[in-house]
Length: 266
Image (cartoon, rainbow, N blue to C red; front, side):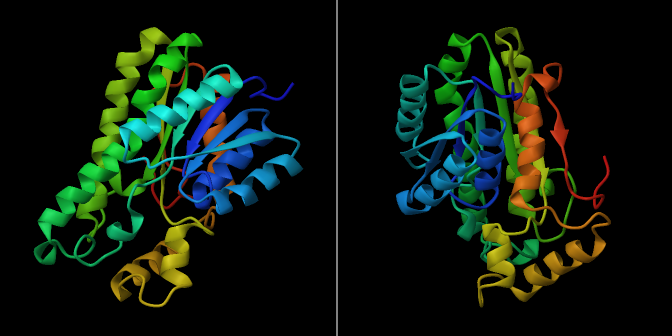
């Protein structure tokens, strides 16, 4: 048997980038995967890939910034597949805003109203799906939540006030949830990433003109040069998430894992 056979997973942002890589790895491991996103056409391509793997997938549209939408996603996952065992909040909520010079760059020049709005939106985008899924996880006798967030919340990086504030808060919040939900046998862990190939951030930095500042692009180039083991792809991150979602990590909760290829060591 595969290590995730019989499990049901929700992956927000599962129609592309890191979320797609996570969804494919969970499906390959035997889980039924419910993709959440806003673009059904993108979802169709990922569902086809899951089918090619011999896996089971389903798409439910919804905005991660909406509590009602996340409740609907969780309810449909439970109704279609009999429950929810794994929740992977991968979607960021508003990644384009995170790349603007009003939100990312030297602190003295930031628009703090936009920074604080971004932080609140981004945290909510990660937490709302988890809150919606908790009753379904409890009904299954436990489960696993794996947040995908930024390594900027663990490693202070100039120019990343907004990302550090959002991700650092989420990482600490995940540890609170790990303690609070342990009696329900719901484990809560974080996977903290830096530059990832074939992700929206990679595309913005290296394949789109004027999508990021020159400073932002140089920062990414520096990360790539300084990563001893190279740069991960989405399905490499998916491998880490799949382990944390599986019973093989049943004694791990409150962990923050950083698959950053040796760039950061904690």
